[in-house]
Image (cartoon, rainbow, N blue to C red; front, top):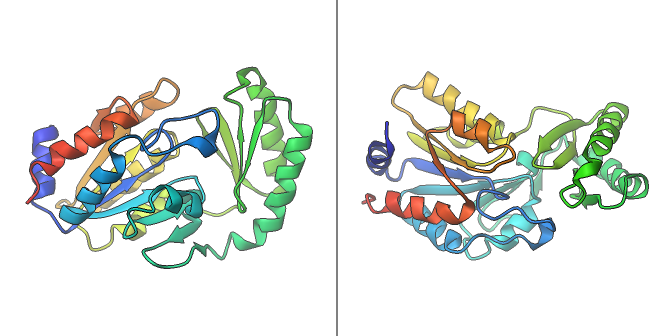
Length: 260
């Protein structure tokens, strides 16, 4: 289906849809300082309108749930899944941590301290309580050394590695990821969209593929946000794509123009 047919099919399922969004590189630009990233202009307003008129909106990100809630504090009804689903905060509720990840809080604290002490200058270590992300965007020449260090620590501590755009994340073992969030959150729905820009988002795409294979009437829409680093793989797997986070509101406005 082309975009007009997808928009019409989605509008016909109003109230029975869900819209899932990654954050970094999808709703906000990639920055050297991850803590400075804010939603692109028009994003919050478009998501609010989408949530009111077509279906529930869910943020699924590698960021902690509290970070996401702060960025979307004007959308209290929107659920946020942080750390690939290891944290969740629903409307009006507390942040809940997956029981399998809770024992790794002290492990991650020590790992972050070790990374800051052992990795080369220019490395940004992002401590997320139950995960540690190591960025080398400001020192790209250190990438191979950081990757080797992270692989050794993952093997030593029994952690999982998640690659991304000039970043490696060490997180607890287990199968919790963006795909498992979509499998759970699309139960009972007839339509779901997922917007992503990075390799971890392919698992969400795969979950939508599996859901559509089980139910031929289920509308699964995969949207890639292009980038020069990892965007090609996403675009190949996507139904629609836009060129940047700043273009996401325009696509949503085209969809909303057909909404009841």
